Length: 300
Image (cartoon, rainbow, N blue to C red; front, side):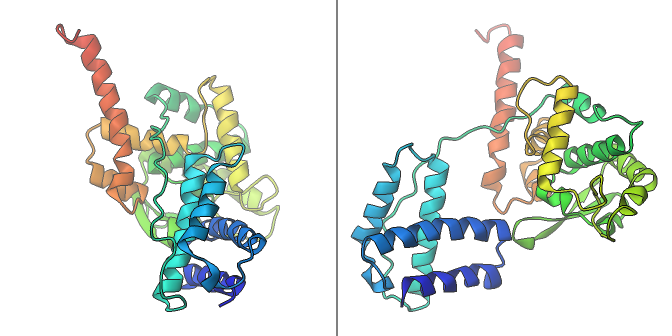
């Protein structure tokens, strides 16, 4: 089969049959477009032209590129290539998988950056409670910290997702839904936004079911949510880096420090595997180690 047709078939498969998110499919498409271009430059037009040696040479060249690619980017590239070749073998398009010997590079384990509880409280209090957009921003920040939602999940919320009172329906990766509690502080902040601010914003734009709206009445974008978080961090005089994922990291870390079971945190975060959640346990262990070192009379 021609390589371009085979790649298009795989992208349709992961979109329709596997139901991967548009963001994930776009990442696979970028990786495979680069692979397709390299294969064409090296004389491969049919899937049968691709041997283990060809795959190995492609990855070796990408690994040696300048500037050096990040381990995570290289691992994702290998995952895209392997996923495509496994699909071809599984569908009987090719008899063998030439990528079978690939081993992903070991990415350095980076611990999530979490804010302290004091920093979180300052961040949540930063937006002005006297300004309409400040009320909206506080509702967004409170909701992110109360639920551990990804910023894409938060801006994708509809008003109806709040219909269950003290719980919230989130749509995560792969369109998977989960129900998470909405604490009293977040509920009060969101209610204030819904009653005092959102009607006025909605009147400025076309009718939208989205919970969070921008100043012109259109749904709030991920980029705008990021600016909200950054502005709040500046007002709160938090000098450490604060990203859209910071409140999610802080949510998980503070739950574990408070005694929550890692399996419960896994469900709240919407992680498919508990192994993804367990990275947060290292943060808590580091905290325990610091407390032990400063508190125990024979720790040193």
